[in-house]
Image (cartoon, rainbow, N blue to C red):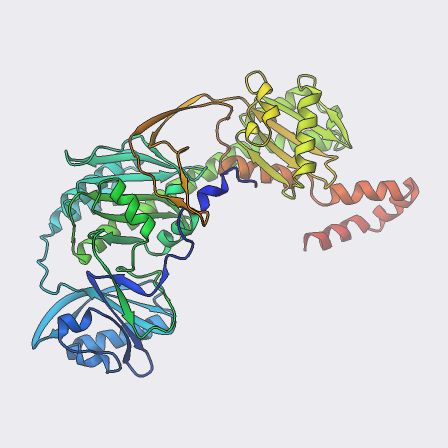
Length: 531
């Protein structure tokens, strides 16, 4: 499948922001060697708080006896991969002859067991309404799934629980842009409801971090970064809660007039599907235990959403596959010759893909294409040949994006294309065309205004004011259902014998073919090819 996302959108942030040697000053990080339980990494602010250096000393001098046993148990589970993600636990930490119960993140990275906890050990606890939490949990678990109503309900809970000024739900579209489906805000920050965000605001490398590190808090963008003592090279802090925030993201939030933020990932089928995001104009130090409770709700919602989306996907594919199978039956009845299939059967296939035109190229000759100008067909072939396209299934939402010459056909013929390629020499093609879909998109800032740095990265946007864009020369977006149906049709139309048998007919006489069929030659070839 071809992507028509501009490559610039994939490089507005450094690709390895999680590989670093600093953390935010609001956190403390320690790295422990599992075999000896000796501390070999220490964030530079540890001594200021505890009045001694713990580096190169045993970790047990920091914990109570029970907490040390808990830490050893969790370390073993991380090492044996019984636990793969970071763990949040409460440990009794001794500081200046006092014992504090602190929420600690523990994870494994680069042969170290990493412990993280807040640097302000006297930080006031935020009240957490357990009954409210249970009410929301029960609603997400048992209510009929309605994405809009449920996300709005969750946004309200997060805002009430954390005191952020704005909480929103951003869903990622097929083209990698973000769309705000729900938003609750107070007078400090404007609502973002129904706004789009360009793909450059969250490039793929950062989305992959969100898939693993499912919730984070930036308490204050003005927090300084502090060094991790004991490192010979930067550390993989993918799972870190206090990892240094990228300079680009800090500037981005500053440009939005936001001082603190939080995020909770919605991962569906192992891919980042959406985010719950939080913004405030003031610092926010919501307790990690409360964030973890919110994460539990988000996980439950993610699972219900995943089940619902998968069920809808399967049902849609099942229904539409019926029409594909009808077409395949006719195709086989007509001796696999597209030229003699009745028009109404092509219409059946065309409607299945929500296309306005369908035509094909069979044995290097165009067919079923009375309404398709020769110039249009030539442009398609030129594109395939000049770009040296290797994909067998090609989805393009805007033909103008690949060649300006297609613009003259957008209004009357089509704006987008789904193409199936059966031969490397393009002698056999099936093409679906979709009409232009005029849209007006409400962007949060002009996505076409960007500032490139000398290293090719994008500077963060300065403006987030509502900007309207009239979108022309594009069709209704080809989605994952269209791709799956195209794969099914491709596999039905070609299996490999399609190419193999036709070439055999060119090489052998009719009598030789009969002899081969009697000896089950084709069946044997097919079985080997399938393997």
